[in-house]
Every structure is written in C-alpha cells, then in structure tokens.
Image 1 (cartoon, each protein chain N blue to C red):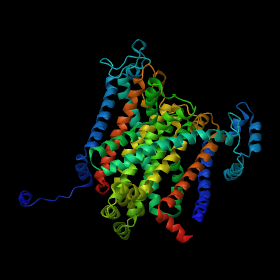
Image 2 (image 1 turned 180 degrees about the vertical axis):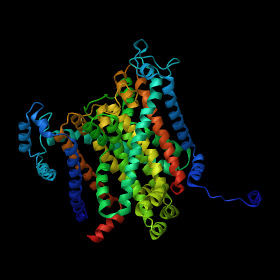
Image 3 (image 1 turned 90 degrees about the vertical axis):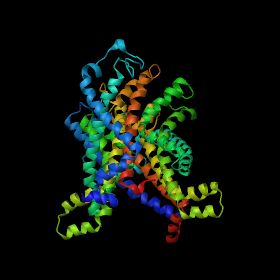
Image 4 (image 1 turned 180 degrees about the horizontal axis):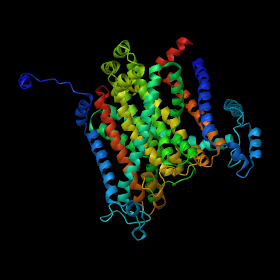
Length: 311
Length: 296
C-alpha cells in the first residue's frame, strides 16, 4: 500500500512538469514584454535591452522555464510588478481563505446531495424522485453569482443573519459556501442517484435482501459502498474546481481568495503573479487528483487488491 | 394499395431515419418539449424585439423620471436605476447570450471535432500531444481560462468568443475522440479501406456521422454552460460591456441597488436560469432519445 502511494506521488512529477510548462509557455506568448513593464513606459530602447539581459528574458523559453522551476522548488517565484511583494508569499497568504471556502462548500454539498441522491434512487420514478431531480436541474442551471446575490438579498439585507461580504469568522463563510455548494450539490446528487441505480439492480443486492438484511443495511452497507467510486470522483473534481474556479463567488462576497488574486492582477498585466498563481493552482489540482486516486484504493478492495498483488 | 392490405393484415415496420426516430422519441418527453418550445419562443421574441424597440431610445436610452418603478402594469419587470424598461432589455438582451454562446460552441465544435477525430483516429504520439494539452486545459476551471484569455488579449467580441470556445473545444474533442476510437475498429471502416477510400474521406464520411449523437447532446448542454460563462464574464466586467443589455451586465449594474430595488438583480438572473434550464431539459431529452440504452 505504501508502495502504491509512493508510486502515485512519483507520477505527480511529470504531470506537474507538463502542465506548468504549458502554462508558462502560454503566458510567455501572450503576457506582453516583461522587460518593458519592468523598465517603465518612458524607458529608452537601451534600458529595455539591459533589463532583458539582466533578467534573462533573451534566453530561449525552455531555459527560462528551467530557471523558473528551479526557483519554484525554493519557494522563489519572482516579485509582483504591481505590489512588489513576493509571489509565493502573496499566494500563500490567500490560500487559507480559498481552502476554507472550498472545503466548506464541498462539505455543504455532500451533506445535502448524498442523502438526496440515495433518496431519489430508492424512490425512482415516483414524485419524490422527480422533485429531487427538478431541484438538481435548477441547481445546475443557476448562475452561481446570481444565487449569491439572491442569498445576500434575503439572508443578509432582509433578515440580517449573515454578513454580506468579507471574511470574518465562521459565520461569514456560510453564504459563500452555500452559493458554491448548491451548484455542486446538484451535480453530486445526479451522480449519486445514477451510481445507486446502477448498483441497486445488481444480483448481490438481491442476495443481501434475500438473506434477510434490513433495508437500511442493504442501502448503506451493500449499495452505497459499491456506488462510492463515481461519487468520490465527482467530489474530487469539484473540489479541484472550486479551489481555483470560485472567482464569481469570491467577487460577489468580497472573499479574499486566490481566484480574486489572479483576477485582480491579470488586468494589470502582472505576469509573475498570474503565472505563478496559475502554476501553483495546477499543482494543487494534481495533488487533489492524486489524493482521490489514493482514496479509491482505500474505498474499493478490488483496486487495493491490484496493487497489493503487484507490490 | 398493397401497403393498405398489408396494414390490415399485420403492422408494417418501416425503418425510420435517425432524425425522425429521434423526433418521435423526443415527443414523448415532456421536459424536452417544454425546453424546445421555450428556446424557439425565446429566439422569436428576441428577434421580434429588434423590430418593436428602438435600440438607442428604448434599450439604452435613459429616462430618469421613470427610474425605480416596481414591476407593474406599465412596466411588467419594472424600470432600472436610469429608468430603462427592464422587460424590453431582458428580451432584447437574449440575443447577446444566444449569439455569443452559439458562436463560441460552433467554433468549439469545428476545432474539437477535428482535433478529437485526429487524436482518436491516429492514436500514438499525435493523440498524446493533443490529449495532454487538452487535459491541462480541462483541469483549469473554464471561467478561469476565459478570464485569463480575455484579460490578456483585450476585451472585444472576437476574444470573448475565443475565450468561451476553449472549454467547448476541450469537451467536444474528448467526446469526439472517444466515439472515433470505438468506431475506428469496426468492419465497415475496414471495408472502406479495402475499396480504397482515402483516409480523410473515411473520417469525414464514415466516422464523423457515426459519432454525431453524443456530440449533438453535448452541444445542447454546452450552449447552456456557455450562456452562464458569458454572463459571468459580463458580470465581472470583461464580457459584453454596459450599457448593452447583456443579462450578466444588467445584474452587475443592478448590484448597487439591491437594498432598494432587488428586482433589478433578480429578473435578469431568472432569464439566464430559465434559458439554461430549457437547454438542459432539451439536452437530457435528446440524450434519452438518441441513446435509449442510457435512459434510467
């Protein structure tokens, strides 16, 4: 098992290298001339050339990339053009807010969607099922910045239960997490329902029922256990997505997270900050995917057995 | 005459084409029909609004004396902070969401089908290169990709279409690749080779038409997600610029008046949601109609 985990972690390295190279290359292509930004608008051609030489912008992109990645390993990703602060430190300062929002939303989504998914699957094709599916359909069709505004309108302006923005303690995460979480809940509900429906029709479920297991035991132990793989997959994907994709929720609720950091700096052409943040985000996503893969092995004895046999 | 006698004796089983068979199954699905009718109505209404309203005067023209009128008889959806008729703006604004999403998805379809079928057909190194780049783009949330592209290249219609088409491209190329791979090995392809049909013609005439079902379903759903993405970008201020009545831009403008006139924010959001809902209903219905095996 430990060998499997180490193996999966090693596979991370090429994934990170490939994705960071593509991001680095693309940003290099479109990000504008960094030497001109550093030297300033009024700089002479000689001065710009001097800056280029000094910072190594004249080197081929792969050489620049290797230099960049060598810096990254040491936590040195350059200095922001705009704030003159260290990119790595700025990113890390925003990370807790983003993590808090991401985990709170996924927690909210799971709490709502797994019971609902199971419930709709057990009551397949009844009005209860239809109602649940209509809810899920509305959830995926709703733009989440709008949902955020509606929640602010109702729970913050009318009722005054929650603050309408900013990050100040546990109470302030409720509305943003509900906003992001409701969209996720819709997706997870659909996945849970269809995974449960696949499993419920299997022979071993009938066997379990035949031997006299209670409905509860059949559903939670026999069925849910076997339906977990697709559910975990979609939760992992969504977690990876909200870690960087919550720019709208962060903007509606003035939440000081990473997505807003990228958004605020990109319009100012702050290439080091943007490139660095996106590369760090892609590394986070690779990590989440790896953790999901490892969880598979714990959840599903069949997958675990494969590695134990090999290892 | 012969068919008439045959009919009386026993039912005639005519073979139907894919289109008519799909339509027949689609008609049984209430949700899909509601979605279809809604979309047709929306297109008709938004085109008609161009003839009824004058853009300069009724859509973006300000009329301060009429501002903040709550929804009522005169203004079904009320008026906004500068007295513009929200009803007129919402139905006129549908054209932005529909045209931009359809355009972006069309680009995504062309590029995605080409890349996906090349990757799926040839496999090997070409497949690896295309799919690895695809994986990276797929892993980054599409809204972030769009934000990065529009901000770096500048805010204009072409860049907006380009930015929104990226996520459509990644989805379409995945779907196309998977279908091409399942069809590539079948006997009728081998037969086409045997009689000397050139490769490009095999891909275009024999493989792509057989992959269409999943692509049609994805297209419907993609237009829905792209409508949300378009309005999200406008909401962030980098999509369709105000005062154009794009739904996301209207929401963004109305934000400041939420306390006093909540409906300014609520109504455009409903428009987005209902449109996307209609497309999702239609997409789900099409999936069931095109591939009855998947129906649960």
